[in-house]
Length: 357
Image 1 (cartoon, rainbow, N blue to C red):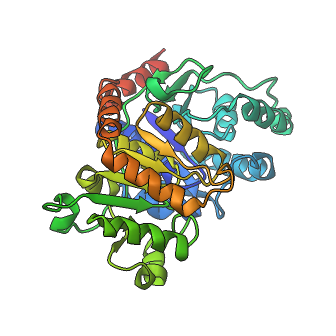
Image 2 (image 1 turned 180 degrees about the vertical axis):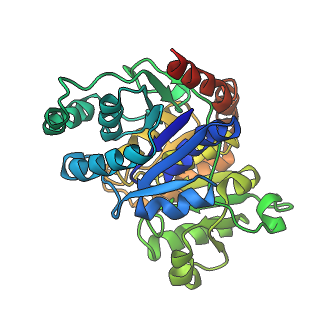
């Protein structure tokens, strides 16, 4: 069968859908990934055949502003490559396409933040597109795949087919230190994912954290975009900084400090690494609250410190996790539960059944 996968937003959306798309391709199905121009490189880096549908990155929460352009691009694509099934994420535009083509639609996301209100608003904003296509309403997805492990799913989350998280990120040529634990030292990873150059703000706060961690004898790695390494590397002291394949490096770490991205959080959970999460938006806060609520992380909300110095609170959180093995134990427990979930290959059979029905 032919499956059209669609993503928008950040590289994390590409990495999240890659395991299922790869499983489909490995099973002999034809696949295409429809994405925005800024995501083309990420798609190529994980071996997915991708088609650009818009020149700029889609912003979630602003879907109505680009809905017409995105829908027209998807309809044009489907005119020459007609899918038997459409897989989408947070955006509801692919759902419109599937309804227009009268093929099954699968929603595939990491459901960690409350989305019911935003979903209702987005569907309402798509009413002009529904009318243009002659559709009375937007049908429910035929299948909802959730990558979020049940122990950290938010209360009231819709029923879903859970699927195991499989780390998938851009790779680079490996060096032995990337996959080897440092002898006699603990290792701490710091990252802001791919949306920001550096965690928090470059300069004093991050340098203070690095100095405090190296002062304890820990080795510090900073996973960052190449341009961040070039711009800020010299300011951050004795650290390894640059693009690191997180799935390879994570198992060698004792702690990670990051912004609350889903790909980052789940790749670390998968490797049993406890986390200090400093969310940079509402979605990151939802990730932090859920993982911390399970006992696998500590959250530092910079907006709720009651006059305390943010740098000191972050350093204290790092010290707490490094001194208390309970956080690592809870993380390993969460990883073990997540590992019992169906693999992408197993869930693929349900997609095949949708098309065969």
